[in-house]
Amino acid sequence: MSAIRASQIEEHMPVLGSDGGPIGTVDRVEGRRITLTLCGEWTGSGRHHVLPLDAVASCDGGQVRLTMPAEQARQQILRGAMEPDRRSPGIER
Image (tube, rainbow, N blue to C red; front, side, top):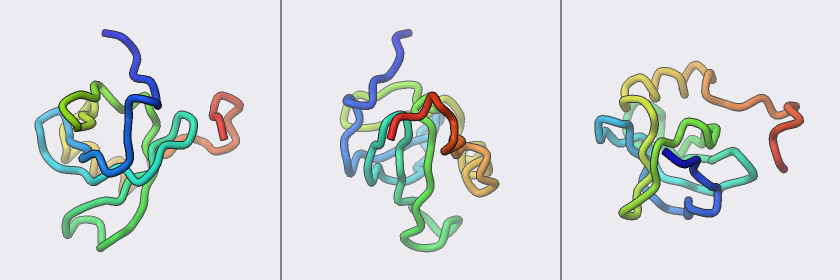
């Protein structure tokens, strides 16, 4: 499987877990980070969180699909475990 490029991901694309469960919507892409507007009662309305581009398995059909099921992604997002280290030299700004 080829790596996903940031340029393949567009604003307002729905983000789904590997099981098809909804996570949120792409707000913007900055370097190797995707900022999401999360959906559902589990997040609080309109909160933004960041995912690393490495969490994306595919991007096709106007959707972003993650490498893990929706529930696992939600838990990691809420714990902040999916946010890339902003000080990392590998992160483009």
